[in-house]
Image (cartoon, rainbow, N blue to C red; front, side):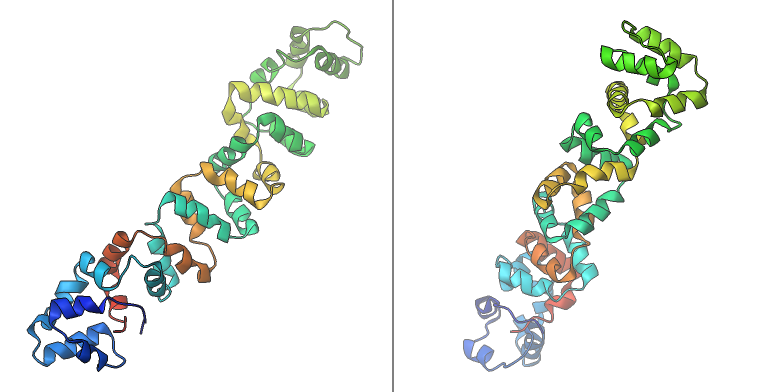
Length: 299
């Protein structure tokens, strides 16, 4: 039995039931009470089921669903899968704000399991490529260059625009000779002459600043190349954030992403979050899917 503050005046007004009769009812559900009224000859009460349990407006009024407390007491009696169903009808803002009830560790795990495209959206909405690369471990940068999806010619083209110090360093590493005035074309020619194996080894031998500069030029022309970073590399910047900042990075996701996360929150918090549902929508859902719960509500 679910005990909440119901609108008894609704029964008095619509079904001719006296206050005295209600007070004499004792512990009873509204459904049982109205059935007993019908047996005793109350013709209006005989249609109670159709009048109320099939009418969202009547449910809204009788059970005072505009009251957050009443909504909570009903929701508290639902099973986890039922609450998860209810949550899809919450507003986007409610879903997003509810993420604060989930531990950062659990949120991190869920984010790490997202498709790489979504993960990249989260990371690079909050971090510039330059900042991301400063945080990224060199082994992850080397792994990036090993991706078979990277075009060797585009990597070589990314040499264009590098500053003189980087060009000199690259040339000296490849030739073993100082190069005071070499330009990007000379460096590109040296790279082009390498077979694929030596090309990979040479890329990895460049200093981290040079490799980062090459990557920035690469992704400037083709942002999809960022997806060649591993999930671990993409998660590293997020792992350094405090929870409020981390939550803010998730704001770029879609409502269905928030819903999937919120549905994994601790079970004891689900009714509290679901209470924020619009009362009229809640009445419609109760009418359509949860009549059994309505029949458990006490007088």
